Image (cartoon, rainbow, N blue to C red; front, top):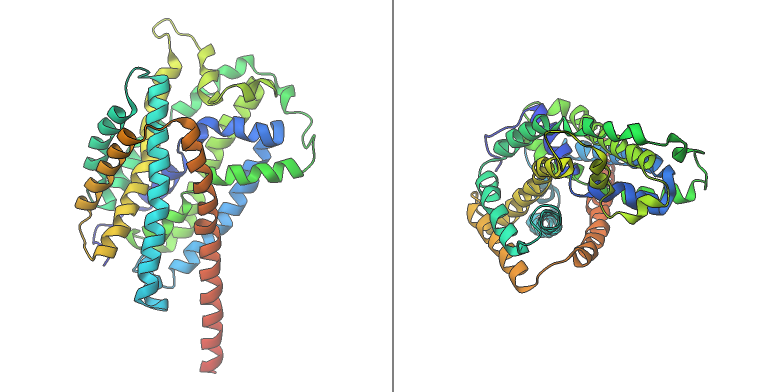
Length: 364
């Protein structure tokens, strides 16, 4: 049963956009440059188009059962077994994404801010505010995403300052190696837009459902603008060969900025970006325990959330993570996300469309 707690259109937009603005943007310019050179920015636009089409399909699917999540829709059309299978599928999917991003966030904090601090200590410290935010209803997450968006909006402007040292000829000629590398890079860029599929769960909580399509297009477009600004700025700042040297070129390029009142601006910016990363991992945590709570037949997810965070702490104690291990899990998550975010909604939409077609013919 859906809670009476609803989210506004702005909260809906910033929830979806916040989920997309994860840790991937820190390495996105390098990953695109490795596959498509400085034409990688075109892959972002292609990915946005594919993501927007998939998003609109999701909204059309959810309109068939507007007062429930995708789990309720599966239960309604395919039976209780399908509803439970869907809960297991999405719990594993969102749990994997939450784990990958939560661990990577801690590893980045260790690398850039607290190099002498153990990862499990960072995870433990991050778990406390995570629990306090996620334990509430979805409208709390919506308000938090809205707050973080406006609080960190200024950070995107910072990337315009290093452009005084930019060499725009790096971007020319366009399509220098043809479309094949760009289409290959589009798969990498697609993962940066992953998060729009959360509309499968956020849709029934939206106050004005008739604006769901517009809202998800706006959310994807805000993410597109942010990715393009950061990626093009990095391509113009670094040479085509130089950008592949840095693991997080998005942060490294800010080292050229100097102010009399601050020395390490990139550290300050990264500290603010931690809030942005939290708007990615917290909704994934919420949706993970939302699904597990549905499996257990419970309406309150606080107990499951506590267990999820405890498992994360125990995991990093027993199996200290590193970026290489996290990258392997990220590759697995990418493959899984393409199925869950693109293939599953498309199949559901096709099934519901065919079913509706047969019903209309039978009624005649």
